[in-house]
Length: 172
Image 1 (cartoon, rainbow, N blue to C red):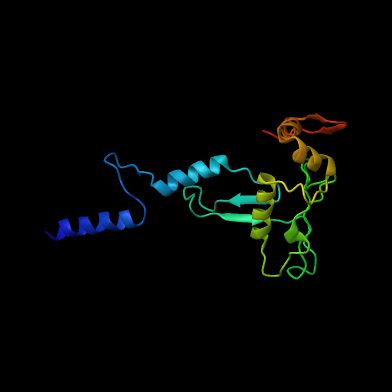
Image 2 (image 1 turned 30 degrees about the vertical axis):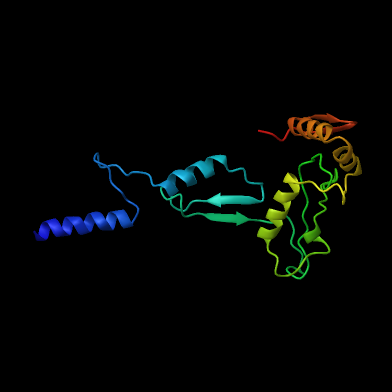
């Protein structure tokens, strides 16, 4: 009876540690492990970000290293300088890589974080703002002919000319 109780406790301990065992003695992947594996496979980090797994068998514990290109001495009281190193066809990013994002200018507050900037940039790519452009030509096309704008974006991402400007391929 005591042995049976200790086996039950051992099984309970293994389950709470995430080690659900199958009949063949192998580990059964949890929903979290399956999801993190899928997320890692789809991960496309910029060159300023790196993900490190101290234990290759434990994907749920990792370090994300963000190395900003330039953070001024005034940070967090002044916003960091953000530049897009890949030339893109976008109303809010000029051909030199300067980014027009309100939280990097007049709406910056010291409580904002690098995470806020990343989400702001992601939103900017999903919803370009033609009302506050750096690339006026792209903004005008977006406002007058959204279908042509989308075609120009695809052409630029695949590598090709939009007007007289050549864009390097950036899709993998």
